[in-house]
Image 1 (cartoon, rainbow, N blue to C red):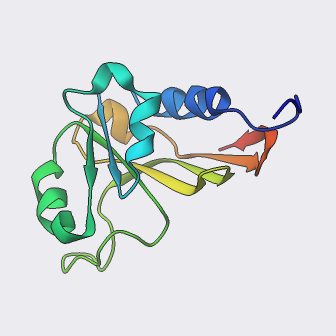
Image 2 (image 1 turned 180 degrees about the vertical axis):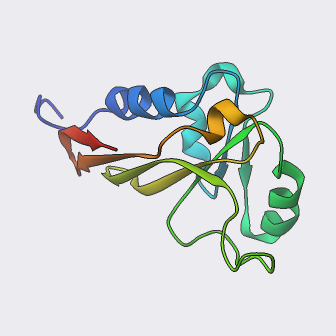
Image 3 (image 1 turned 180 degrees about the horizontal axis):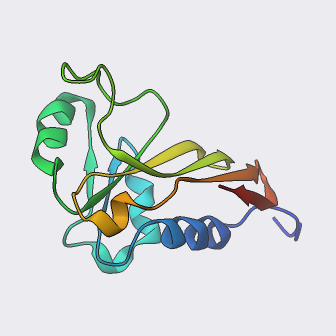
Length: 131
């Protein structure tokens, strides 16, 4: 607990908040703890559970959301055999697992964002980033 080299939630929060644009609402699949990084967004934040996943994804398609999910957790889609959302970033080896953050809307400014990759050091503090 007192080891200064342990990962902190504050570091995770800083990175995920840098990824998700301010005017986009975060949504997470089976990961309600992501809300803790966005307490001011409690009116729009949602966590999607398996039982309602396909309906919820249909509801957010084309709207201003950032979908936080684990790799391979999006259902296959008939139109393109995979996700049609724009990847904003990957967060790998975080203390909370591997995450991919997608933008579900149609704002050209966000669709032009080049995906970033953040590699965390697991339970230790620190990360690296690349494009």
